[in-house]
View 1 (tube, helix red, strand yellow):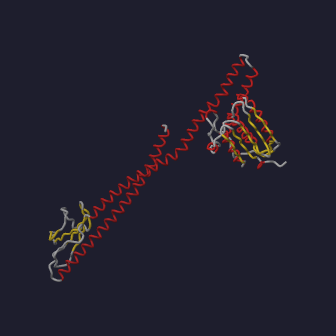
View 2 (spheres, one colour):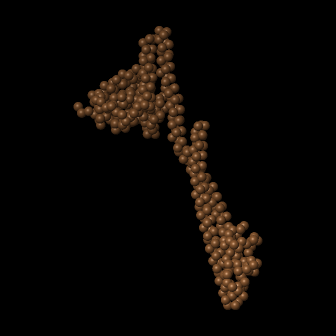
View 3 (tube, rainbow, N blue to C red):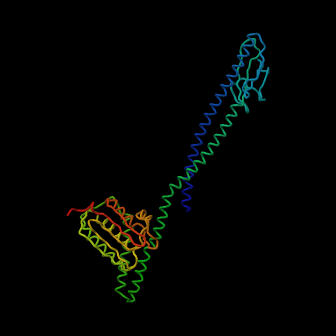
Length: 390
């Protein structure tokens, strides 16, 4: 991963995780506040109920002229104390040592919640019942821990998802960068051969050595450079949605391409044989020429020195057969993708067959391939869908 990719990844993770964690924090904070409020209400109700029971026992005892005897509650975590009108302790089970706030009905002090209820009946010395529990504070502390843990684990989960998404999003960009880097390297490699041959031929021509042969090499190199430029330009700038269809004699167009590549194939001592029937189609001429040229160029590129290329047009089916390196079953599924090439040693950009595939898809022409390793390949295109009736 280069510096630019690393910076992009860090920026994406910072924005994504920052916003996601901020949102999670807000949601958990709202949840925490609601739960705390709910716990306080529950705690208040429990203390109030316990206080009402004690008050009922006190009133019942004095109504029957009996002495009220304080006793422990069933709930171990709820304590209480009884006070007289001067707020002096009559009896106390309280654990808390803090000063009791008799003016507050329900409040928190230290580690406890308190609930204060008043007895207004005349003749009863007990005037205040103070309930105490640590249940609410303990539940709130547990809730706080769970909330913090939920925030931590949620943040970790969001971080992992962010990294996973970032890798998915950056992969096409990274693949594109790799393809472009390879494309630039291949450009230098692909252009190096014809340019070197061209310069050598010109140098030899100046010295007067084999002028006829040198002119053939110059012509071949010039056409190779022209073919490379045309492929790049067509692939980069041509709009596949714009077709200018016209009546085309397919056999004549193939002959023109063969004449063009005869001067290129001479450097590998390759012979191009043709067997063409008269056939007319309705198609964009530039795209048709590109389709034919790239199949022939591919055959020349991957054919062995001194071999033959067979080009046929029979019953509307155009075929280009070479006796070169061949294509494996696995590569046959990938060979029409952009920047995919047979073997690196043969050069090329990997855009020729991509152009062929795109043109065939544009006109819904059937494109097929038969190939065996070290025996050669044959490409077929069926033009019958766009044929002009004779």
